[in-house]
Image (tube, rainbow, N blue to C red):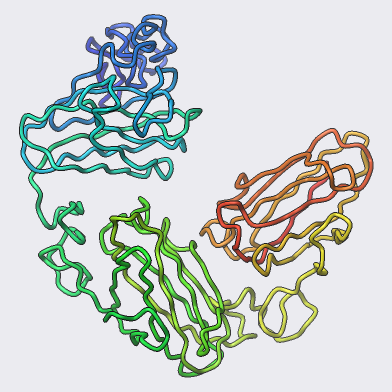
Amino acid sequence: LRGATCESLGFDGGELRCSPDCTADTSGCTGVEACQDGRDNDGDGSVDCGDPECEAACADLCAAPVALSDPAFVTGDTSGHAAVEGGCAAGAPGVVYTFTATTTGFLDVVLTPETDAALLAVLRGDCDSAETQLACGVASAGAGIENRLTIPVGEGDAFHVIVTSASADQAGAFELAVRSRVPACGDRIQDPDEACDDGNDEPGDGCSDECRIEATEVEPNGTIATANPYEEPFFAIIDPPEDKDVVRVTVPTGPTALVVETGDITSSDCLDGRLDTIVEILDESGALIVQRDFGGVGHCARAVAPALPAGDYYVRVTARVGPEQRAPYGLLVTLVPEVCGDGDTTAGEQCDDGNTTAGDGCSAACRFELDETEPNDAPAQANAHAAPWLAEISPAGDVDVVAVNVPGPRSTLIATVSDNGTEACATNRLDSYVEILGGEGADVLASDDDSGVGYCSSASATDLAAGTYRVRVRASDLVPDATFFYRLNVTIL
């Protein structure tokens, strides 16, 4: 049984046996359906609100909230439960717990969704009164990503902890950890009175042993004229929210790729969205070379400016932050000398086939040789597709339309955006949107954002009659100004 028990499988108790076919026999387990833990507690094959025994509990949000210990860890599922109304709630299904703090300090509510539903935690004094709302967490960033809500607490303070969603039509399974604790610098939890907390007391890592930022930047540094010279390590803070930090980087020889990446000082800031940076690389005159608000870890940005000649360049960092929020970050700059034609694809090269011969798919500048002909933004301007199809969404807002002939009478057309081996899809450097069009391009037959690899798109249209159809590619709505190279793979079945 590998350590499994009736309790570990969701039952209240009993004896778990091994059946003759070496599977777990739960006939000796007993329990009463808990209605909000995402488990089949009574072994009848129905879970939570799918069990008739839970009809009353699922219809009344506040009828029987589960009491949590301090600390507590529970699993649950909001699916099928009554809606949470008022306050920051969006009328989505929710489940409720009661909690009484045993320690004066801070209350941590850590919500970890098991789905992509935008779940959030809400704290209230009274379950059914939105006017008693004490705090509201932010919506979760995705499955498996912790979402932490922290507020000051006193011993004996009592709360209703509500798990719901920021969208009325979303629900799902989750893990929830709740505890009160005494605050301490070095516990890897950034409390409201701490500027950072990286879990150690090592100097020089951006966060001091008193949980203050060890800033490298010198303000003001919001312009090219006041830019700080880059030194490693480099730590800074976006504060106030409209703050801009500009850093000067000297490229000694060219051609060189300039790789810039932002990272968190407090662990998990990039992943949980507390740190959401935008990186721009500028030339000596201040003209924009490249801008990225993604590509690094989580919400942190990574930008690459390829094949730069020797000279001074400038990195400008901004962040999306709330009105009361500061954004400490680390800046890492890497210079990668480029030798096109040596067979080594460096950060600033799209390809390197070991030569500088044009016409073989990889140009003398180590860029993919594109098949598209601009302008091709409208259906009437569509390029005829031929494999392999290599193209580029550039400048920002660009749209590419490709014409595809389908034999019919009941064909399936599959259009998939890929990165041609650069790994840009998986690392969020390529976030596309694809549509399959019929009726001379007037009808959208199928569309997709990210059903392909990583953030890339894949759409399919079925039962197509013979004729010419069009595939339209652009940047995702989440990053409408993004530019990227891509390969369009077309399959006809």
